Length: 207
Image (cartoon, rainbow, N blue to C red; front, side, top):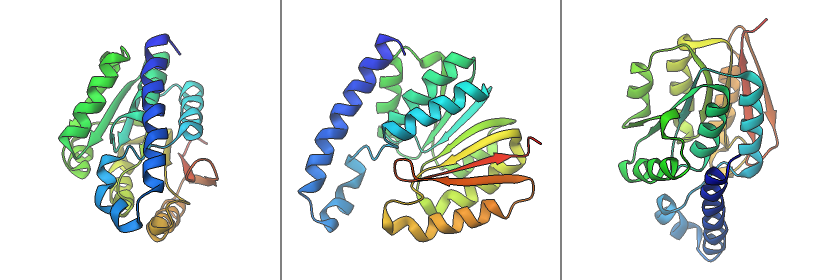
């Protein structure tokens, strides 16, 4: 990891620490009202695992469904650059995408990222495949429809990593439904790992 990427991630991690302290002072209802102010990132352990997977798999086309403020985007883009891939990252909120884009530029990774703003389902429907690697990290009730839109475009051997499978508890019903759905697909292998907030790693075909 070069110094520009490390500096940007350092700034993100300092913000994560500040927000963690602030979140501890808020009542649940207050946090729900303000949650769009928070990074809500995948966290460093999950990010490092994504980096390892990408560098081993060497995907050409990567998709992040849920840019948020761009913490995981920097990790994914840095790994994409290392293997000669391109990351497409999708976000509903313009201000979040703009924040992520600025940090991607600071990290020197702009040539490896394409930003999409709007409904993720519309962006996925328009995105050409084959898609080799996916991070799903948006509202959990959208995981199944997003997966189904991508499924015909996923390459043989593609990985789909879904975050928040164990935490927060409020998302558990949607997370369980997603895991059951992907595991019922033919030609798919899938496993739940207790890393970060819990991730489901799904591999398409590849036999």
